[in-house]
Amino acid sequence: MSEGGAPGPGLIPAILAGLTLRGTGLLNGRPARGAPANTQRDPDDPGHETRDVNVRNTALVMAGLALSALAVVGTMVWLMGAFSASQRRALPALTPQQTARLMPPAPNLQANPYADIDRARAEASARLSGYGYRDPDRTRARIPVGRAMELIVGRSLDAPER
Image (cartoon, rainbow, N blue to C red; front, side, top):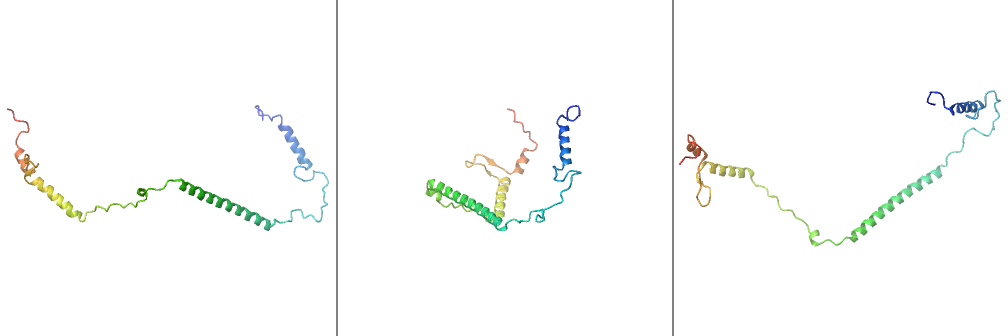
């Protein structure tokens, strides 16, 4: 259709040609209207194909296709194996260090973890609630937390004036 909405220049002749073909019967194989019908048929012609597909030939073609596909897949597998073998042969030999069997160390598990934690808590409690020295030269001492709080309470934390 053209811009104005009217049919284009080629549409009218195409419609007329289609109507003419339909009217003559050439389009769908029917005789034209008003034309005498050809009622004489060949008595030996059933009007459809009577020969079936040759099953043997079809089966042979399918078997040939299957064998061809298997041959292609087998050839590809063989080529991949040959290629990977040639690649392995081209690699240098492994050193004794690379072929040595690795043995991981034994796990460091605690035999009795509850006894270990009790012992660690007792040591920490003894350090916090007892008297002792903080260094091996015995120049600094430690006192229990409770006693330190008694000594500090009521005192000023500011440095004494001189």
